[in-house]
Image (cartoon, rainbow, N blue to C red; front, side, top):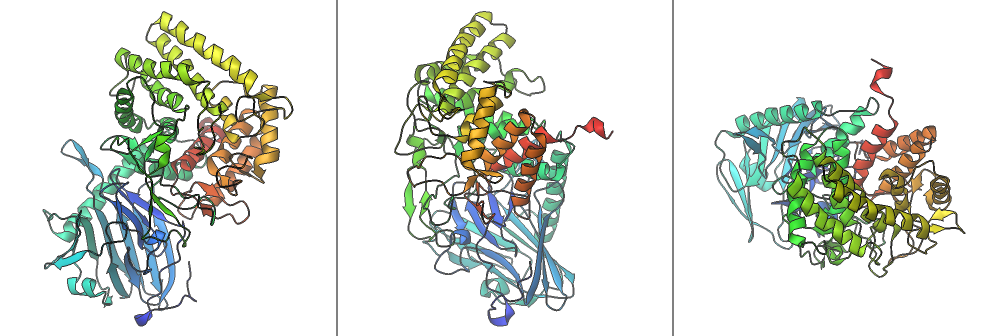
Length: 610
């Protein structure tokens, strides 16, 4: 990035880069931070993913320089960004017009210590000169209560405290406290370290602690990546997707968030702005399955802790489609008036009304997420009879409600139908319960669940088929097309070579695709017709094409999706088919799942080269 024509501030410091989703992600399975191409922290919620965005510049504010943590270079000429290979450690290089440069290394500490994972709510930023002695400015401007509250600032010889009503942050540094407080430019002649976290003192020195944390965090991520069972092709893309999914785990409870942001619009100016910082049963299942396919089963074991609590809490009845990461049931939706929104496109929503919805696919998502634990002998905590009996309660609820109207997986707020995708997942719950029962040596229960699954399958194939359109429709007796019916093959309801499935794919490609990209559905919803392509739907198309033998087409579309990623290899929820721009919350776990699934599906096998 070469911002030569960028307007400057006094001292020759450029204005902040305009908001975009060309962001890097650092985190440690406790919290995360999003960092722009110039090394500016523009989004971070503390003390956890769904907390207060103390850095919120991504969603704007009265002053573009507030709600961020910037380490700037005077006379910026070029910025480069990369991850240390196979890690979540981000490096940003900034170069000035005189050939002087610096590197910012960003990470959140994560490594094993004292028999557990050490993952403090701490962002570590290390800056060192690469060439010459560039002049830099450090600007740390957290805000509390969604931008409403300016913190009270106190300082000591090597720290600054940012004091709010609900939390206090402490910045510990070996740089000049006076320069940081005054945002005064200074020459970077040696390494400086910045550790921002809870209001606690360090056991060791700032520099020694930062170096130790970096070394240990690098070693952790390299070891984690080394254990992945990768496809032969597209390995870098898969590793980056897998690390991003791992960063979306809230390890304390086992919840997996759908994305790290709220209110990035699904399309420009549409008000399709939602808060995705919670755990959807649907999205979490797809994350678990994608990581399982790479032999990373630890995330599944963490998630099953969280899921077991959800199931027990439901008592055999209705399960809401999402919860807070601490198992919160109430996520009241409100508008945040203090932040204008991404590029000024409000509203900014906090909470999500979808927790009130009836979305009947959740029962299948629960059973599917847990199924591998009954068959996989590697697990530290394999599932058994007690877990099966809990899942049977979920299955019974699926049987009771499978043919009742619901909001569907797209969470329609003003329309209820018997959605094909919902009944499909209820079928999957019964089908997998039958297979689990067989593994556990329970033939009567296996027969019981197979009977329910067979009955549901017959109804799905009969009642969702639309003869006029020669396709499976989005609802029983309906005629509208919906990409989610492609999951029929993915979860095993239908042979992908079945003429009805092939015909459905043809119809979806004709009516829902803009070139390689696929939209969710054709019918207007609460906000009109969808404008942007939904990335996971494009990946479902890739999977379906590969399954029916159109592999070269699938590979071409996959390459298009890889090209649509941001420079660091991440995707948001949506892609604009005309501009190629990313929209929707970021990074979207669903989309990163698609990268892994497509690579595993399409890659040549290892035995072709070894």
